[in-house]
Image (cartoon, rainbow, N blue to C red):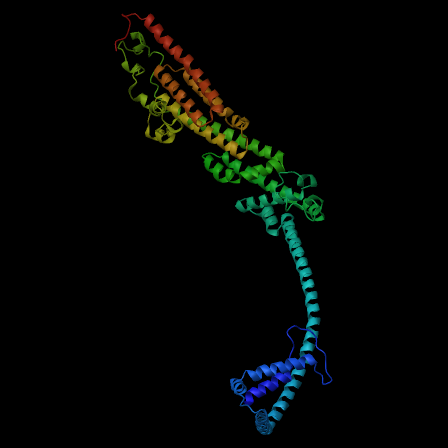
Length: 517
């Protein structure tokens, strides 16, 4: 056997052996149990027999155990001396390594103590961190609460506090778009500070998230009670300024040659909210403004149509007189100082000619055109016609008057409904146009009293029928159709009287006395 195999056997014998069945063994006086000794012996024998050289030597009987043992011992002694020499040679390095290991042990011990200190400090810091986290959460909740409170307070103050510029504009500024916006803001603030608990419970409350302060209705807060008085004073000032503005504008409506529609559009309808404001803030002032407007427009329209009709009468060519009958005697056609028949006394009462052009637009409307805007020719411009010396038949004059009248009636009807918010009511319109309509009826009746032109009456009846369609298309038939019915009732009796005169002239005609024409 080799020394290496023997050394392995020695290591195996020195390490001990544990049986596989795990049963405890008895211990001898040398510190090893008998079972361990037997097991170690069995292992040594197995290791010994595992060497093929030994197996072959044992098999042929050539192995001498005593010589083999001495050989092994000498090899062991040699190895021992070599190991001791190597150990002596490496002793300085081992000593240095041991010193370094001692230094490392001391360093590691210091680090261990330092880490233990860190661990203790971190244990204290974790408690501080938990405390800081709790404080941070508490502060975050406080910040959110303060932010919500600040937002609510800001919104509350914005809705009750009056800025200096708002008060300045309401008290001293011009009545313009800025004044209008300031009045709107003022009215919103006034309505807000007057909100009570009952108002907050209504389902149609405009902004339930902002109408209370800390659960208290605005009217019950100290700030709300204080601001009500100031807002009321500013409100009265706004009412006074608005009243002065409207009275000033409506005074302009009574001036001659005033462009009424431009004033209505740019100076009244532009500030229609102020009329609504007066209706809520001061119904008495609102009624005064309405009465002043009604009176001003009534006088203005009455004057305009009276003057316009007077000017148009100067343009009337009077195509027919009482002697313009179908059958007329020659005596009626002679001059006072002559026996000759004067044909100039006989007009063109029975000639239609170009007079039918007055119905051009009306006929278009009858055949399916737009009745609201069918008339293509514009009304007569009295000033230009008088300057140029033009003459017109009365149906043209009638059409010009009625066109202006219906346009003005439409404008006033729409304006009154939009400006005074009188939807479904016509009291204001009748108050404005009552005198003017009576004037037109009176002028027409006075003219018809001496009118003997049957063609003119028939054409005016046709025009009246067209104007009924027009007012219906413009949706003002409720107020204008009764007037047009009265106009029609003036035409038919007069037409009957004229036609009866013609019939009487035919029945009583004497061929010998009839004029030749």
